[in-house]
Image (cartoon, one colour):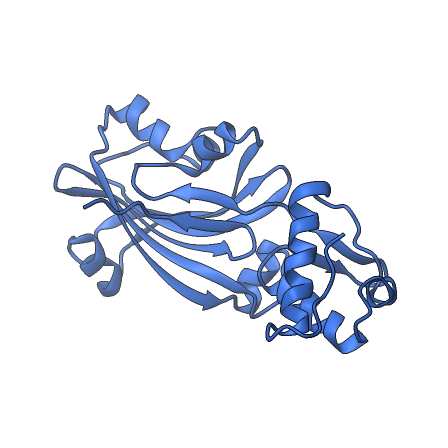
Length: 241
């Protein structure tokens, strides 16, 4: 069993974090309960404050989660998304063996605002579908996103369509759209009260705001603003020389 080296220059809480992470990755499973703070103190001969600091950092980094009155548990692994290739939430979840569900929280046809028109390179007031979806995997809310899709190009899309079929499949199968490119920007943010409620996390939780523009050749066919849970996702970019 790995022990704390009190003579080391590495802070005790950091050493303890490394030990717990190793245990999580080698011998524990999702939703397994960690020992109590008192048990960890006794096992590694460290103070309660050291244990609490390590636990706080592990929770912040997404390794564990707390349930009030019950204890501390191993969190599900973050979904590793490769940004080099085109991807969709539905298909990525299926590849991971998870059951994806899209819950449509709002669906309407609107005249786009000046702000959105500039984003989509369309005239202000142009009709577009506007819909908000909660993206769920294995009954866990993962992403809340609001999308804009040009109405005139794709007439007949319904709320029911979006609940049963992935948007990209609708565009491909019903309108013969060939998606050629997507651009995304990422910004670390804290969830507001409304986002936190939908994602079933605490207000001001770390998350990622993702803006996506999806193209067919030079035409924008989708503009989406997503809030993704910071404890459930990590993104990877491969750089080649």
